[in-house]
Image: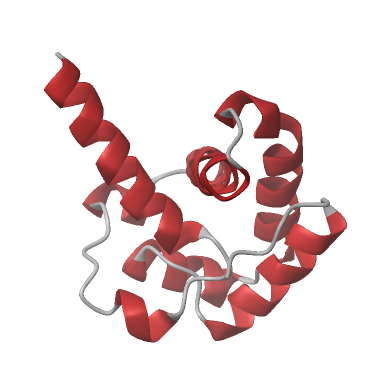
Length: 118
């Protein structure tokens, strides 16, 4: 059971890195996105981005993931509402934000008072 939990956390962390704005596209070219992203409703995309944000912020700030529920919810909502249809489709296809979406996501990080990933 512990091994499953550890593996699930590891895969979530990998996905978290992909979803956050600071991730470079060139670093993620070998990343294989979850196939269910292609047909997931926008609410599921928001949930994934929020969860990824909490994982990365908790790791960066050495804090509990639960302490980032509200600001990461802000980040996910703000980012996805700012993306146009082509940017959302690119996220569905690749599992990470393209360059234009990344710029919008960085603005959301700042407006939601989160720490930018390095």
